[in-house]
Image (cartoon, rainbow, N blue to C red; front, side):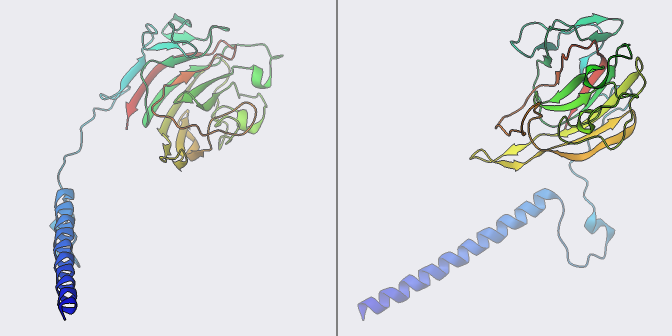
Length: 264
């Protein structure tokens, strides 16, 4: 008999515990909804039921350079850049409001590191002989987080492999169209980039995605980046955090100007 009574008491205690836990859970849910300013109502009859006002939307003043943009290159100096190889001062040429690749000086990277952003960058292919063709003509690249390349290439009347043309995710995804300006003219890239997210055990939880607008034309539309853009071999997916914007020295005197970025 004593054992039976003890069992009843334990059962009642468990019921009380479950009841309290349920109340706490419902309270937490109600608090979450209140904090979110979006109160869920069944069959709302008032327009106010589906409106929320707080927090207010951040104001950004539009223009050639938005008010919240980080200016990475304004045509004056390379103070925001360094050698990608060893962190020494960037050794590219700066003149006439633009920076130009100096062959053999190596890739350069921003000193600051980023994850998700909107990037604006303008580039110019050099005037090169007609005998220079394919990947040897106006070749450079813009690297997201220092490892995912959007190809820069003189693709104007210059056939080369599809996934190596201007606007390609290099060796992965060709551009939707060829929107390259003729040799010597300026091109514009507007890039929306979302960094990859990794699991605690080193797997890819969410891959990187990129949208590229080339001279006002969409050439990559929320394209999945498969991993690092390797010259030889398959993409790799090393675990990493924030990374720089890097520009490639491929030996061609490609120029860049008006580079700015908005964090997202």
